[in-house]
Length: 67
Image (cartoon, rainbow, N blue to C red):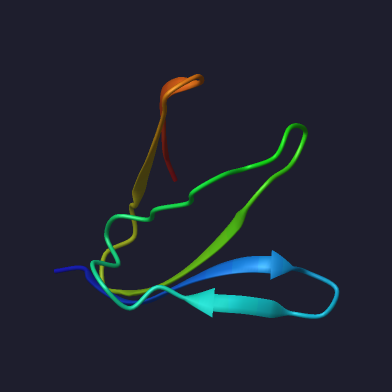
C-alpha cells in the first residue's frame, strides 16, 4: 500500500526554496506557471514502485505519466 507523506513545491532550485503543501497532498494546486516557466514538485512516498502523475491545465489539457 502506498502512502504519501510529504509534497513540496520547489520554487528556486539554486537556493532550495520550497513550500510544503499541507492540505490534501494528493492534489497539487499551482496558481500560475509563467510562460516558458516550470514548477518542480517533490513527493515522499512509501510503498509500491509505480506512481502515476496526472496534470490537468485549462490551456494545456490533460497529460499523464507512470514510472
